[in-house]
Image (cartoon, rainbow, N blue to C red; front, side, top):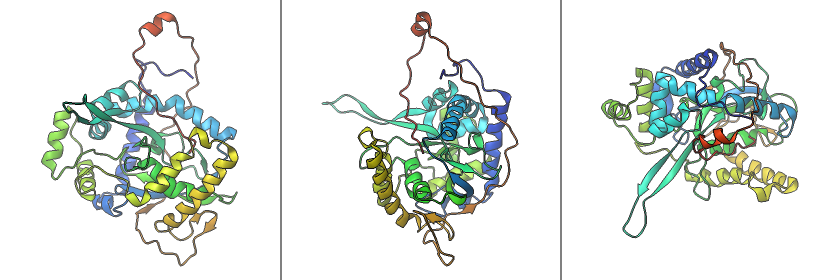
Length: 357
């Protein structure tokens, strides 16, 4: 599938859909204290969706993935062009990340640059990518959730590997909530509780802000627009919830987060091996998920009883408002690249693999 050219702008429908997405996030709650209600998962709510699990190797999943790939670049561009989206992007992914979004690329930047006399300067590459809140692997039964729509997107940090999974919130959400709920799930529609961040980027900041002046000075230094009051308060509450440090996945969840990423390693593609790994992850994740999920949720094929009380309290919502802006699927275009066009093609950024989740 060809990529949109760097000069192609998002259409008016995408621009309107991004504005709708930001407004919807604002309307979830006017109370900024909602951000810190769950210390392990600051700045998110659980959104209840009645849905049917799909075959990740089936045609419906494949079509949803093709449609998503065709419109993702336009979403990056439209979000970077919106004043609120641009300011939030600058805080999350920096000026370099915003520039990449402007040309339809996933945002990335280099953090923690270190140097010494004996070694050259080194930095850690931080990459964010666009993901679905309600994933492509389930089919919502109501018309309130459209899988391939900006109201169902979040740009999250996803690429951390190895034993330290502190920078991998997207895999954390899947290993703790989605996989335990969908593994061994009944064939009929069930309630699925998905993580819906209250920001279009997660984590929304890479440094702490103790007061409004610090936040506004940072935005000015980045050359970004100032934020409306509701977003300023949310950013400050998120900083408070993380003790004014960058957000990190709690250590007690690193193991299941790593196990989720292991599902997609080349050496684990054998169906029998992969299925056993999925079963092991669902068993481990179910025990932890039950501490967060309400009565009636399914974990590893079993329904939590009516008298179940979660130990951890995350705000619960149920999206019922259907998107107002219609995004038409963008047809794929194939075009042979000439030698001349390749000579003038800018260097491509490394692409993040899209997992079947």
